[in-house]
Length: 283
Image (cartoon, rainbow, N blue to C red; front, side, top):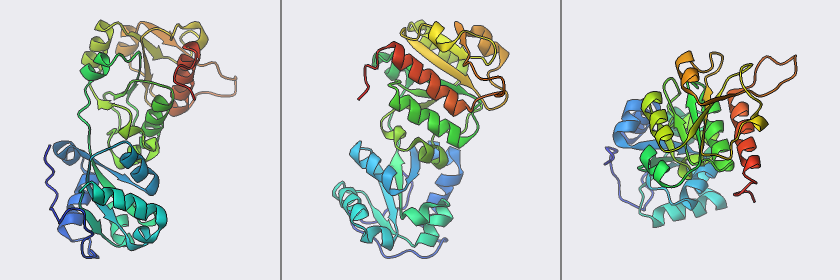
């Protein structure tokens, strides 16, 4: 998609922007706050030196970089900005206060990128030969959804599919928690019925996490083509999805523990899938 962001000369830092009323700042704030605007423009925000480094090393397309003078002065940031400029992306100088007005916390880091989303689809994930997919339903906490993406990447999953009721998987808090997973792992919004049906037709077994009602992870064959499906904080998976799953899995816990954080549960199940597969992608 073509960005509607106001354009400045590519590859050169702009005059310092100090006002939050500047059109570039207002447009970027709109991207931070409005999911629909991010979707229409096909972009997301990633702020911080680590995320900037991950995006550049993965070859992500940078629509715009907003930086503060302090960030430009540091050796690490200077190297990153040189790479951004070499790629022809616009670089806009702003104050730390302006960065914080866009996304709280970005001012301390000094770098905020507007990144174009890759054209990932579930069909492409299936065609890629992926044999493990993580799916989330109703996971509303951005930190949890981001940590699930990070674990999915670390444990060799082919994608994270964010189904109904989830936070926007491209919200900046999710991107921040995922710590670079978005530039290396297909992260897809989707609807449960068609997405799970497509995966099932392609030979995937749907394994639903059901606390207190399922087999232990080591008793479920996760070496098969598997979709690990987890529900949201508190409510878990709705009955209609549980009934449609091929198998149910539970994570044994001590009697004093009533539940696990969904991000932690996803990491445990993903790790078990990798263990059963002999850690094929492990370093």
